Length: 220
Length: 178
Image (cartoon, rainbow over all chains, first blue to last red; front, side, top):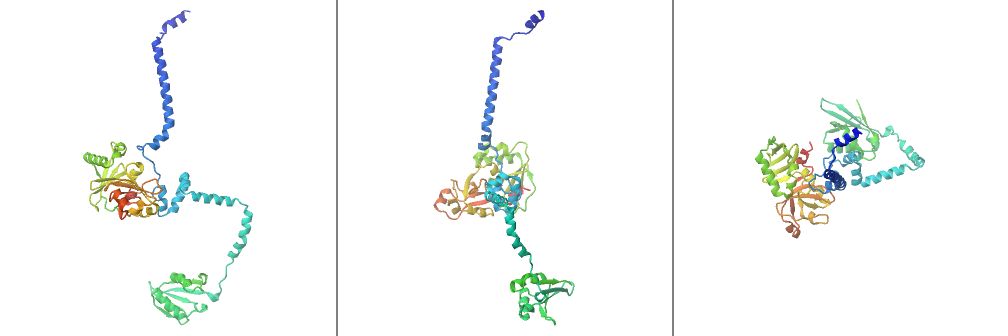
C-alpha cells in the first residue's frame, strides 16, 4: 500500500498541455516520413532523367574509344562487336538486331534431326578427299643457288612438258622481273636473283595449264 | 585543327585571375553555364593549362586529369566529353546519314547536308559555336563555328556552312584516353 502510494507521488503527472504537444509532434513526424517516401519513389527516375544539371553517363567502346553507336565507322568494327557481346548484352540487342535474329535462326536449324544432315554431307565429303596425284610428266622444278655471298641464281626446268616455247618464256620473264637470263646446256632457263617466291605466284596466272600442285621448289 | 599534336609544352598552373577570366568568358558565351559551374570547377582543384607551339594562341585546360576546354584567341570552346555530359550547353544542328563518314575524317559541313530530309537547321548567328549531331544518333559528333546566318543558308544552299574545329577520333580526343 505504501509503495504504491509512494510511486504515484514520485511520478509527476504530466500536464495536459505537454501531452497534447507530444502527440502533435508524433503526428507531424509520421506525416513527414510518409511524404518523403512517397516523393522518393516517384521522383527518383524523373530527377535523374529530366534534370539537365545532372551529368549524363555515356558508354565508350574499349577497342575504338568512340561512343558505342559509332563503332561501325571505326577501323575494326568486328572486334568492337565481339567486345560488346561479352560486356553489355542489352545494348548489343538494341544496336544490332539483325545479328541476334541470325543467331536464333542458326540455333533453330541445329535442333532439327541431325541424321538427315549427316547423310546428306557424307557423299560430297568423300569426293573432296580424293586428291588427284600429279605425275612426273607434269612437274615444274625451281632451284636456287648461291653465286657469291649476296647473289643467287634460279633455274627453271620442265616447261617443255606443257608445250611452251622456251625462248618466248625467257623473254617474258626477263622483261617482267627486270633480270638477266640465259639458256642452259640441258634446256633450262637461268635467271639472276632469287625469284622463287615470285615465280610460284606468277606462273599459274600466265599459263593456266600449270597448276599450283605441279610446281616444286627443290633444295640443295 | 587537331590532326597531330606534336609540340605540347609542359603544364603550368593557372593563377586566380586566370581562372576568373576563364569563368567570365564561359558565362558570356554560354548562358547555361551558371548552373554547372560548381561541378565543372570544384573548389581546391588543380587547374593546369598546356600551350601549343605550332599554332597561334591556342591553349588546352585541364582540371584534375579531366580535359575541359581549349581557347583560341579569346574564344572558349568546350571539349566533346563535356558536351556529352551536359548536352544543353550548345545549339544543335543535325546532318543526314551520308555525311557522317566525311565529318569523322575532318572535313567541313556543306549546306545541302543541313537542308536535305535528314537534317535540321536551328537559328544561329554568324560566329557562334555550334554542336553537330548525326541522323539517328544520340551523342554529339563535332564542334564548329558558323560561317553565315541561318537565314542566308536557307535562301542559298551553297558552299561551306560550318567550319569544323574538333571531332570524334581527334588527336585531342585520344589524349584524354591515354
